[in-house]
Length: 621
Image (spheres, rainbow, N blue to C red):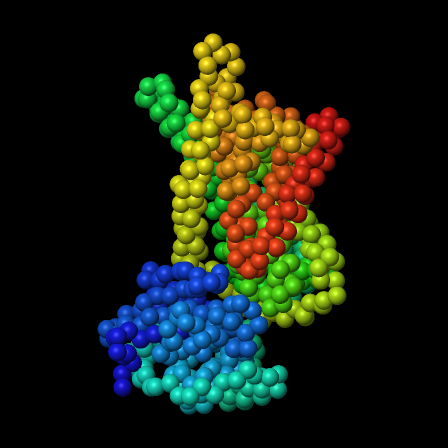
């Protein structure tokens, strides 16, 4: 019978090994008709979409996490196993499976196919990245492979227009048979070796390798995976990335800042003096505007991360860092979650699901918030621009960029230190499993995919600015504006407000680290999101009499260099992100690890700021 269910919609699941191009195929098939959510009860992402074929058939497609086997050694792989074996009450069993394989590297993919066949569900195999395989001179007898596997086999180039036509045509031709009894059992090591021998025999029969293989990847890896040259290249890439965050974005930042300055002046001139004028100019424009100005820097950071992922360099970086991180108690696979945490600790923590060992996963979760996330960029940039001269070192390197790089380096080094302490305190008797990672091929990034990723992140940042940051800004404006100054008051009106009362109450605790009551007020709403501190400072100092576009000048006039440096150090460590703490609780299924993270980060922040403030004062700062 034709591939139609009673409801008229065919349910299929995409399965494949990591880095096989499965998600690229999913995006090409579903386009904008996809939804992203989490599976109930876990933080594993669920991506589902709809495909309409040329013949009018409708498919509901779910993109499952990558896996090498249904043995399931990590939370991601458990989801794939449970969906394929119909063990999830919240998920309807798929009518058939689409297994995706990298045409340039079929060994592990075919072993997975042989294992999936024992599940008893109808299947088809898609050989992805056929353009790369042909360019390398790899010849695959698709018909012979289909006969050997006893299932339809089609080719695809997911990142090119028209590259999935053969897949769509096969979906129209696909004949859906009833699922047979499941013969799958948890494979032993011997079973996996037997499956691999069978897969290798099929490959020998259907794949013809070139006499003179393409050596571009091997030539690049000879340098990029070299123990010394590879690390130099990695650190050079990271250094350029952090320099770019500060220097490339400056023209756009100036443009946005000027736009908000004009907007603030216009609002001030058009609105009558009073509470409404204060709310619009000081609360909305002075608060939210002071955060939105950093959008170009955040997008540049995401651009680098997206390009490195698409190029296939991330796995190489993880391999290079394995020995360094292993000495500090971190697994090599922790590198990618930690690098993701430079954008935001939340997806970085969620990405630890790819780490099989629970101890290694927990260690990575504990230190991921120490990575300098994009929410810190507004804070760092504001203070650096106000206190560090805009000069060059050696006529080439930006001094401000070097300071920014130093802050990122401090976060990385502190993460390595904390992981070493955690290993000693919690898991000194446990050994990490050996690090094994399949290297994907180098390939040019897909511009459309990169632009879509940037758009998604910009949209998320703007949504956050319009919700959490705006709400906190309004709260700060209210606390800083009421009650109003009494008649005959000589001090600024803000000194009589709720904000001043709260700030002065907290100030004695923060005085030893050089923080004033305005900083105390900024730190409280900053628990919702780190960048809210910038909006809070902008609102407080605007109401105190400063211009919203001159917040840096106000800080330079009222803070000492020692206070500014202590503030930077506080933000290297401080756990000022409630969402991150909530994800740690969900990911570990325990309040214990959330409170451990909060406690050690707060302690490090206070001690680090205390030491920095007093050392800087002793040196004349």
